[in-house]
Length: 66
Image (cartoon, rainbow, N blue to C red; front, top):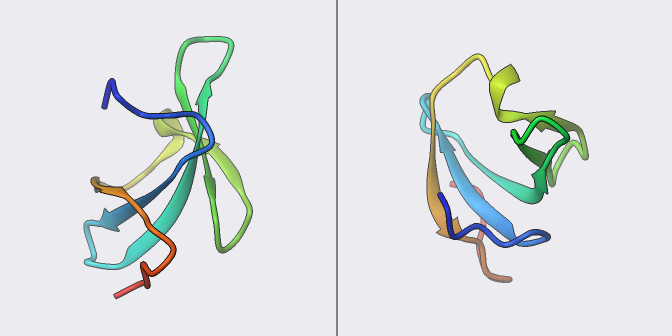
């Protein structure tokens, strides 16, 4: 995940199979990645996630949750 671009929206698949769109916000003051869920607009750090997830790649304008 070293190639993430700040401000880019990425397609994410949760361990449940649910797909989401998260915007990468960059690193916080402790050097931890921060994200914004595009649906809920909530911001969070990767360390606070309580479930497994997979980065599928950048989400284009035609991407839909599946």
